[in-house]
Image (cartoon, rainbow, N blue to C red; front, side):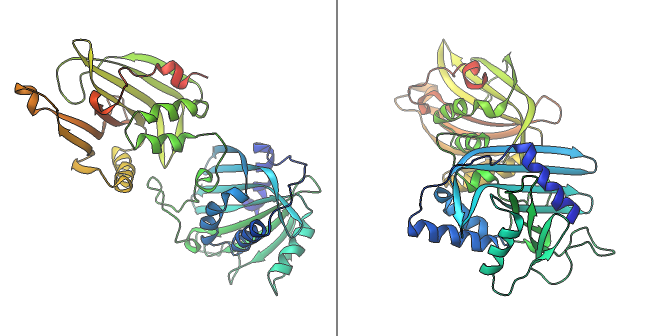
Length: 394
C-alpha cells in the first residue's frame, strides 16, 4: 500500500502541476471559513469532503485539468490533476493544486486524493496535528502517515490488498518546498461513492464535477449537452474539440433511423483513442441528415461506445430520469417529446414530430450507437448539420 502511495509522487512530473509562485490575494473572512471547512473535511478522508469541495469550487479556482491513464499489467491507473489559478491558503500553508489517483489491480482498487502544498512535509504535518487535537503522524521513508482507522494500512495475510484502511499522508516532493497531502482509503471504507458500471468498483468523483474551469468545456459537458437532444449540443461540442484529439472523418450513407423514406447523408468521425466520459469509452461520433425533396426531415446524431450496449442504456436512462421528461418506449429507446404534426393533411396527419433517444448495436464489431434524433421542426432554424471539420478539427 505504501509503495503505491509513494509512487503517486511521480504524478507531479507526469502532469507538470502546480508551478505557481505568486501569492493569492487576501481572502475575505467568509471565504477563509469555507476553505477551512473543506480542508477539515478532507482531513477525515471521507466522502463528505467531495460534496463540500464541489460546493466551494469558487474558493478553489481551477486553471486546467490534466488526465493520464496507463496500464502496466496487471495494474491500471487513472490519474487526474487540477492546477489552481491562485494559491489557496490554509493556516499559512498555500495549496496550489488537487490530484487523485484510482488504481485497479487484481487485489482490488486503491483510492488516493489530496492537495499539493508549497511547504515542507514536516511543516504541513505540524499544521495538521494542530488542527486535529491529539493526532500524531508516524515518520515514514518519504514523509508522514496518520492512520485514521484501527489496524494497519498494510495488506493482511489472506485479505485483498489494502482492505480496511483509511490513512492520511504528507509526502515530501522532489522539490524541497513542496509536499503532497493525500488521503488513501480502501473501497470498503468508502461505501457512499458511486459504483462504476463497467468495473463494479467504487470510483472517485470526476475532477470535472468537483471544479469549474472558466470558459472551458470538456467531454463530460458534451455528453450532458447530448442528453438534452437539441441544437445547443453542437455549440458545446465545437468548444470541446481539443478534448477529442486526432480524428478521422469519413462520409456515411445509411437508411433513415426512423424507417421513413427519403435520402440520408452524413458523416462518421473516428477518434484516434477512446475518450472516456461518465464510464463510457467513446470511440467515435456520427451524424445523419434525413431529407425529402431537398428539405430536411429529421436529424440524427450521437456517439459510438465501446462497451456493451447495456451500459450505454443505463447511462442514458439516468439522464432521462434527470430530465424528467423522457418516457421509455422500448429497450434502449426513449421519447423526450412527441406531437402530431401541425397543419398536416391526409397520410401526413398521422405522422409525429419527435425528439427521441436510441441505443442500438453498431454495424462495427464491439461498438454500440448512442443516438438522439429529432424532426426538423424540433430543431428551430437549423437546416443542416455543422461541418464535422468545424466540430472536431483542431
